[in-house]
Length: 272
Image 1 (cartoon, rainbow, N blue to C red):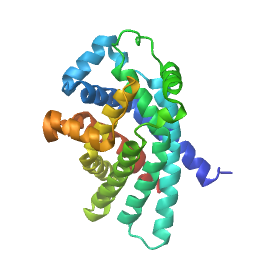
Image 2 (tube, helix red, strand yellow):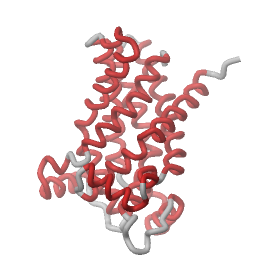
Image 3 (cartoon, helix red, strand yellow):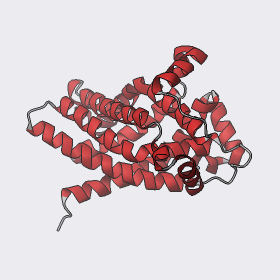
């Protein structure tokens, strides 16, 4: 007897997200965060990370990210699959249904990703600071709760919610446009993966939202009072213009493709 569809999608989502992180998503997240907070380019960010602890340092944070990945992967697939099914039942086009599914799945993820992203950014930003060398997931969590209370873990929630909703709406929407509008699905697996590449790259327009989120989380993790979203965007722009808002777009683009293939393309091929 098969488990109910919700239970199956919970398991599928968790496993797909964990697989995407372990196979490349976690190193790309570490590189992206390092580029964003240090202004290094991607090769130098990789070099700096490896100088801290060799190749394993690229996978720093894997235990906590695996727990996070299981939760957000499960939440995303269940929520997006349900939303897509309901939208299609109401007569929406496949592209519109995919957009709606992406928004719903992304917002659901943000509930877990806001505190997880804050902790992950803190581990990256404070790694070389005296007194923070032995930080781990639990010690960072305890410090934030002690200083800011439980609500401190959700600093930057607005930026995270915006990022996740626009991320996955774009990834799912552009992927579906490529599949059906450009007819790439007729080319089998390669066409499906190619659609995911387009979807992943197409989602990078919202990189400024992620840049603001990382800088905000860096401040919070260092005990600096957070500014408003607009305040951060303005200060980043004044510091380096438009390019500064797109800092880290290269590793982010690769990461977006990676996650889109696992969490949009594979479910499409499974008929979810």
